[in-house]
Length: 303
Image 1 (cartoon, rainbow, N blue to C red):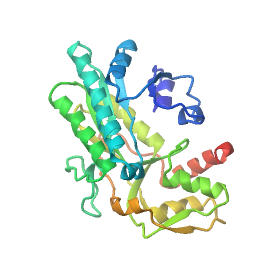
Image 2 (cartoon, rainbow, N blue to C red):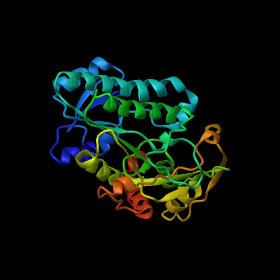
Image 3 (cartoon, rainbow, N blue to C red):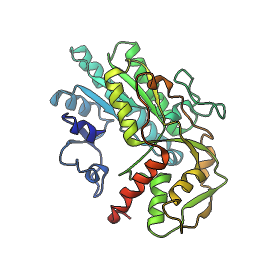
Image 4 (tube, rainbow, N blue to C red):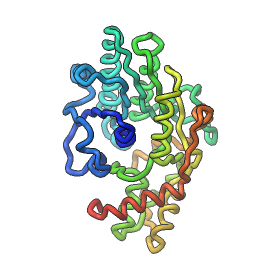
């Protein structure tokens, strides 16, 4: 998103929590194009200073602890960052609203907001939340609080998006697609976790950015929007698509990790609401995997 905004002529300010040798910003060659503020979104005074010092017009709130397994190990950090961090941003926005400056907010929620629901039925924005695990519940709390701030007129322009699973180049998180590609490139077999059958929807990152840019212009304040490609895969389906590029790789069957037994069994979105605004995904799952594999092949130092 930062790359797209920079290329459109926007000035991008971001909060840097940790300094690491390899980051997505460096890999996308935008490290030196972004103004970095050292700190933590839980620091409300820092957020207020940034909004004031840089005359921020719009906030794209991606900051989160996003890995489900992490939440299974330790609950409190999930709520402190995902919920209380969001509250810091909202309070800073409320203070700006009182002073006469309306700052826009696009909050990146998650398809896990809905929690476990009827198997086989796509989630709709008006569905209630049945979130009942640390990550999904921390995000659901923030999702509802963002919309509450709009309802109370604490913030004038807020939009919530609930994307499906994202994938694409420069994703350094330990997710199934980059993990599998890296293993195959190293000459190892892709891991298949025994008994894991849950279904996920996968959307190529550039398609999701298209949706976010559209919502910045056409989204209705206070509303939530699902963003999904409509392409769903289980674990074997994802690995099989990647293995088309590594035909000699042999799967490595391993016992399922304990946290996976608590995972939501079926997650697919009904994205008709945003499609009515003119968005539709451009990248098929096969093409997206091809582009992602090619990117990793071109960045040998990472694997």
